[in-house]
Length: 163
Image (cartoon, rainbow, N blue to C red; front, side, top):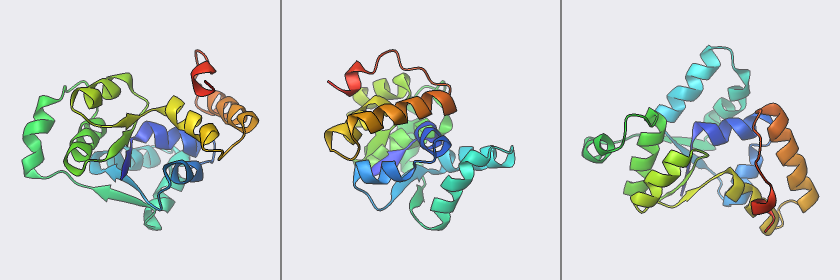
């Protein structure tokens, strides 16, 4: 089971390659926390149409929303408020459901490691696309360029992706 943060979803939505997430994770559906759904809907209401494809996948039941329970509140309150609500809810849900969390936030990675939650970041996803032979090295490099242009994200080095 995979939970995906809004940052990873938006990166792949901006380059119109959301399907790669389903392929790399070998999942028919991806999961999001309710707060992540709210972040996406807020983006749509502010005119960020990049999220339209994510909403369409929700409508098709390819992205499912999960909710925290009252029992989750104690763990959630132990997480720093500096993390976004979507990140906190996702961490809590991943802990309870023994799921993996896909996020590109270093602080999230730290809190996942601290709490025994498997977390995967953008570099890991790109590496898997190549290692699992979903895309060639050349095609992964094209995806990296697309991300850098569409998301204005600069990779310090692509060496960790192809090691």
